Length: 446
Image (tube, rainbow, N blue to C red; front, side, top):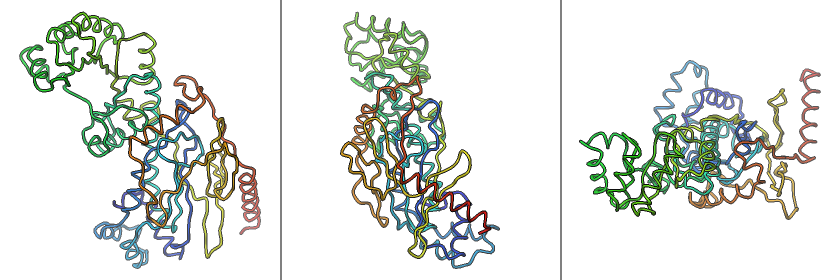
């Protein structure tokens, strides 16, 4: 994958590191989220597979290097830097939360330890893939919680922020618990079940609604889903009931879904089609799903589009990628940012999950508590994958189990519920010591 897919300042810093003789210093960067969105009690970590693929295929093509040479920002850059870029590969380490792990504010989703230039250049891509997919995965988890066991299908590709975002959004939604997607490419690439039959345009393309239904039934057989609200929902339901089997079910896409679904259910059952399902769409999100479930709507499955593919209520998170360690000539230096509201903690870290809280520690700290699970795992060492990543279905199952294990209040889709993330005394002491040292050096002019 192109290493040029990054912000310009990553490249100017890389050139500066090279010119200053710092190219081979070993840096550790942590990727985390400063604050959870107001509408989230947790995030689900997602995007690791794409991060691994990106790191293992990182390189510059000659045309990209020539482009960089042409930019005014690089007019004073040593020519050797561009030769360096032509041979650049990721040779560092990646530690990360397994995909589908619930994560909270200021907890690392990923840690990169690599030669400084390598670790710096990958910031933009890693922030993008982890932040976006984690947003969508957590939105999907909220939708599946609200649906109370009814399948939820991701239907949002056409409303996603780009075609590529639609594909990765479908992947993230599946991690978060969706039963499948409408996106055929996502289905092929990731093995996600695909859903969809026909749009309103299909019905309007024929001389009558009945003709359109008959042609669809001939085409799809037992997979037939009649979209019954193009003209009149109840009349469409009666037509579907009269045509009878083969049929999977009907779809409602407009109107007051709860009472409509109950009347459609009555019509189908009266015709002996008790097995036919009612699938509902129409600008749904987790709150609307919960409302429909509470109302007793006769809906068997839901399709959620725009709000899911864009994580509509929280389309972005405050994801950051910060330097926490730097090793120069074998000497380890801890680094941190201490500005108001944007401070960070020094040192590469580990997260230990207890039944009712998390503990954030330095990665070098030992924790012998038997009820504490270390969450951050090694993924790449010296650029090589330690073991194959789990299949997406296994990720989804692990995510579902992890969400079920959360305290009940965190699974609420309506009420904010804080979760305690404690910091080890050793990590606090290191941060305080580093801050005092920085203040002393600033006061002395060093």
